[in-house]
Length: 220
Image (cartoon, rainbow, N blue to C red):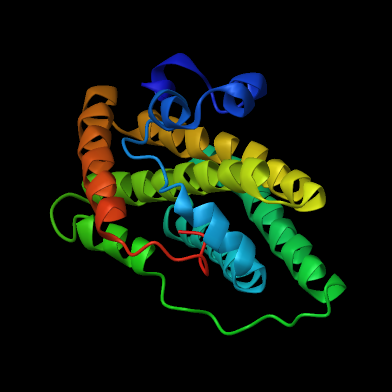
């Protein structure tokens, strides 16, 4: 698994950018199912919707990190590592908002995120607090990993050199975020337990992706 081999700051960017996408999804991000190739074509047609959805995804990522900091203030490494991520994610939101305005588009309404809601449904609701904490971190790791894979698709498949570069920047960031959440899980939870639960999450996420409608108006 990636979280055994690399820290969140040591994934070779060349590897992420130049490997075959299906191999990338499995070996670099751990994902078991690559995005349907039709998605990027649909996204290119619905760029306004994609930008709007992307903006809200960045906003929710920042809020999720704030929520974890508020819930676990005594976990010093978590607080120290996630504090700059809040700033970064909110900066990403502003970048996407700026792109919308540049195109004379407005931020549309936030949609129901079916993908994320299905991940939330897999989280443990009872039992030990550490188990619930682990699932929160692994949920965020999966969202970041899938976002990275989607941004890679956009950076390679859009028929617009400017937008390809725009999404390449986000791809680079999301790869680091994914590994950070795994690293934090291993800081506070037994590594064998993290690996076992992560494998369960990967299997579940692949099933979610396999059953979601392929739509070009959303990041996930």
